[in-house]
Length: 525
Ligand SMILES: Cc1cc2nc3c(=O)[nH]c(=O)nc-3n(C[C@H](O)[C@H](O)[C@H](O)COP(=O)(O)OP(=O)(O)OC[C@H]3O[C@@H](n4cnc5c(N)ncnc54)[C@H](O)[C@@H]3O)c2cc1C
Image (cartoon, rainbow, N blue to C red; front, side, top):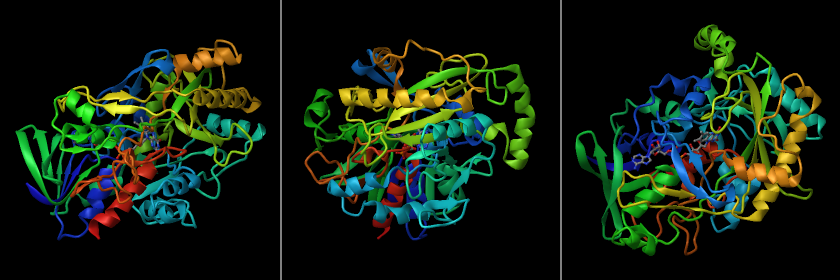
């Protein structure tokens, strides 16, 4: 159990690292994953996402602390717990964010992370089915394609947005982000192209790569200021896995700070509160949690081309399954969030501050509340919230879920942005092109600002992009330096969505894959 590199977490970042670090047969790599292999068909059939988000099948299914900004409600935080991590349960939207997001990272004291510097890394992993151009690459492991069979309602949403003055945008990852269009997805021939499918499965036969599923890292092993390995609990009990060169934490936005704190690396008071001896004081661990807060506008529909809990959908699913298997097309290839838009709520903004996800189903409360019949929804997310939260320990027991407090709507400006976005989204959803797809609105409680704010506080929650809990930077509260090495320690890096200093304006899978590409360059140098 001695390797050159030990990677904890086989998620979006961990799978990329396992691939890149084991490319040279002279380097030995161990990838440790708490969850099972990614064999569930729900992972690989895109529409299976509806069966993945609401339950614990391959999902940590965390709950947040009660949120004062959400009337004291507990939020829900699904996270993948299988090979591929959250990329095995996500909505497959391929989105990089705004170029200004990366220029902002660089300006915050992170040289090497500006948009022009990270663009080649996005292109490296990409296999863009439309072909290569300045923004897109071909021949990479991650297949990025247009949706195989988008439904009429998704096209109608785009049409309605355009009629409301939103510019058409055929490529949100190209020249400009603002506008409305169909999303591109990480799918290959109609199947989910998770980070595991893209980066891990093709290299599983490498003799220098060991993948341990069902093994949970419980603590880092430190010798003075150097990380030398990881303590791991599997079916056969506790083992220690030693890293000759580097331990890399890719356990995600909640897992990575939790593991650091369990190992005595974190804020002194927090560690002391749980009786954990301080190995290395690092006050920023678990701070700076930021996520996209989101309100879904939900409508009933009588459009039978949508997916619904109906006999007709069940009957369509049978030929749909064969169509999917044989041709990679049809209703089972939907990622549900087929179309969307990036909007500015005020003139003069340098970057859009709202993202819309149009959903061709009646998806309510993370698909935990089921409704008979058809529906459509529009998710409205505030892209750059000012609220910051924390991840803390519940106890020193590594098997207890961490205490997650996103502090949603903790600052008033976030409420105002979301309110402005909701009003814009309602206009689009009420537009003529959607007339034949749209029925009665659920949870409508009036259209005054007061009523909409009440609804936001009563119904908003995450759209699944928490980041920032092991923030990169060079100041006292930064956890990793711009090369992603844990500050003040040797042989230890964090490489996953937790290192983002600020939240990108868009979905976070492609940015996380890019982060791992960049870290791999340094680790093998
Ligand atoms: C429901 C949902 C929908 C989403 N939709 C989209 C989308 O459409 N597009 C998009 O771009 N982004 C989307 N995202 C976000 C995106 O998928 C994540 O930001 C990204 O996958 C995070 O990657 P990561 O490597 O940081 O963490 P993860 O991919 O979550 O990986 C962390 C891994 O570490 C493992 N782990 C944790 N703790 C331990 C431990 N102690 N020991 C061993 N293993 C451990 C976990 O099981 C997991 O496999 C979505 C996320 C969710 C949950």
